[in-house]
Amino acid sequence: MTIHDRDIHARRHGTSQRTSRATFTEAEARGPIIDQEGQEIPPESLRDGFREFRFDFSTANPFGNLSREQRLARLEAIAKLLDVAFILPGTKVRYGIDGIIGLIPVVGDIIATALSLWLVREARALGAPWHITARMLGNVAIQGVVGTVPVAGDAFDVLFRANMRNARLLRRWLERQPH
Image (cartoon, rainbow, N blue to C red; front, side, top):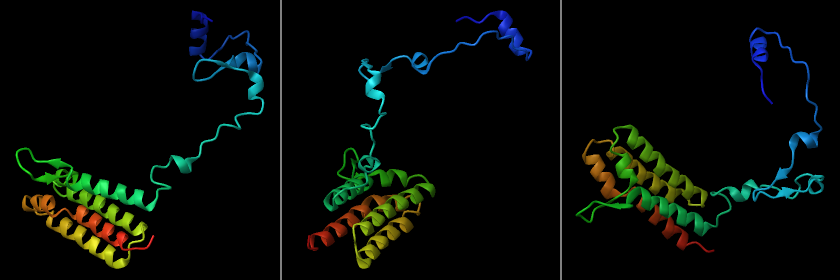
């Protein structure tokens, strides 16, 4: 279908001189329905709608429906990423994203502390009692407060490893619990 110049100019001036309007049935307007492989889907299979297609959001959630051991493994993996993921070249000093983020003045320390507090929250969700949670919060507080000191605080963050300490605390407590 082509548009003539007179139609364009007429629309621009607010007067449309449209003389005919195409009428299609729903099936003609839509055309064939094609699946992902490029095959046409027969219309009779679509009469009942898409009842066989359902998306369950509870299974798509990567944080839901995990066992206690899977949640602990995820927590330990995040703690390793935050504290000991990388090695300083030429040395045996390990550091993580927490040490890198902590190099950003003020904001970096706040972000690093928030990530550490998320781990404490996960521990609480796993059922850690108040005394374990309090010790974990103490580790995060020490790292957060000392981490605010410009250069020495960053070195302390790398060496103190509050997230690894907290993961170890939680692992020890969970191992003593009956299953």
